[in-house]
Length: 163
Ligand code: GDP
Ligand code: MG
Image 1 (cartoon, rainbow, N blue to C red):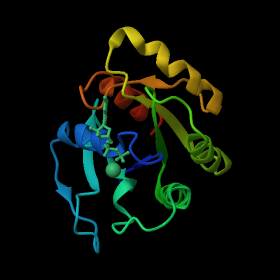
Image 2: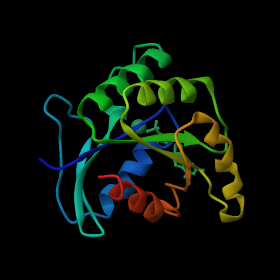
Image 3: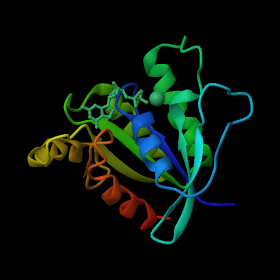
Image 4: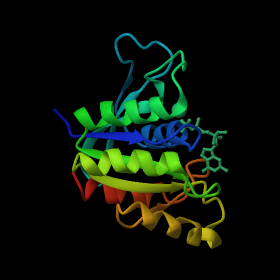
């Protein structure tokens, strides 16, 4: 099948906004995961002549009853199990949190290719906000604003370079 790219990270960092932004750029279908009726969680993306499936991990616990940390870690585990590349989304306005570090540790331990997406850099003059996420030890963070669309092309370039 196609390579799989999972969007992971703690709640409210903008995973679903990024997913929707990436899905809008494809020419192919969005389809529902069996058993999850809420949201389309997977979309086929084509970028720079490469195709892959992007997965929004945020919808896997529709009840949202688990403690936040458990949800995040569990989602990272699920995503790692099936993904070729992980996109770890963080909130650059809020800054680095303990949950970001936990998610990064899970991803790193599995030895998967990981990209850090420093989201909510709405002001292009503030791409410096992404710099503190170097401390996660997962390479150059990509500064972007999923809401405005800025930097999403750079992230897609970085993804296809790792497929
Ligand atoms: P998720 O829980 O990680 O899937 O996060 P969501 O995609 O649901 O977004 C959480 C909140 O962050 C929502 O209020 C979004 O509108 C907001 N958000 C997402 N992306 C951006 C962004 O690039 N800039 C800003 N300022 N807010 C954003
Ligand atoms: Mg979400």
